[in-house]
Amino acid sequence: MKILVIDDHALVREGLCQVLKGLEESVEVLQAGTCTQGFAIADDHPDLDLVLLDYHLPDMTGLVALGVFGMRHPELPIVMLSGSANMQIMQHVLQAGASGFVTKSGLSDELLLAVRQVLDGGEYLPTGFDETGSTPATLEGDVKAGLTHRQDLVLRELLDGRSNREIADTLSISEETVKSHVAAILRHFDVQNRTQAVVAAARSGYSAAPRQPTSNRI
Image (cartoon, rainbow, N blue to C red; front, side, top):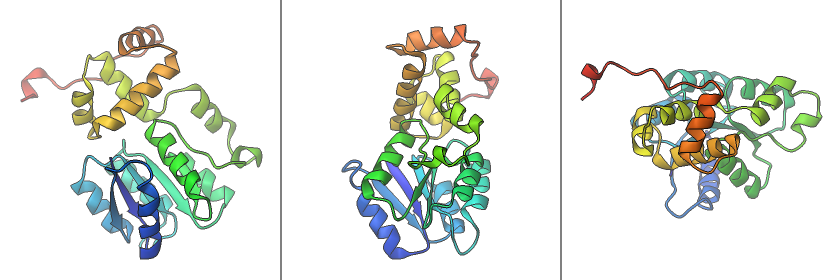
């Protein structure tokens, strides 16, 4: 598992690294002090599983950085970090494509919960966020009722008969992330295996992802 932490405070980055070690022994944490550095690291490491992105950074806001990551690495999940629980900021970053929002004042257990939930293909909303009236009804409905965009892409690869390794190569993500998305897909369709998921998806109107002509493949 490989995670990128983008924060302009070295002590905060080191603290986050220590917390993330609680996920598993083999987790590799990369660090960047600016968004520009973070983009370069992400370009050099296509196997990144997740990014922890501070909202207030010296070269641009996390909201702007989300747009850049969305263009360069659309399948890379982003969890936004902020020093304050600003409901308007939460709403904006979630609508802009972030998979979760965590305040720096929160407990380590909350961060690990958020990361695990996002790696499992879900989205993380802070406690009480949907009780303020700030969360659009469509956002809450999408999280509970449908597949996320990343899960949808993995599902279409499954419909095309792709293995986890092939899906990982196609979407530039790790096999562990693919496994998490597949598990979320099985839960979504309430089935026990990939074959049942493909059948259920086909019945629901899903189709395989478009493919390049065979002659273009190596």
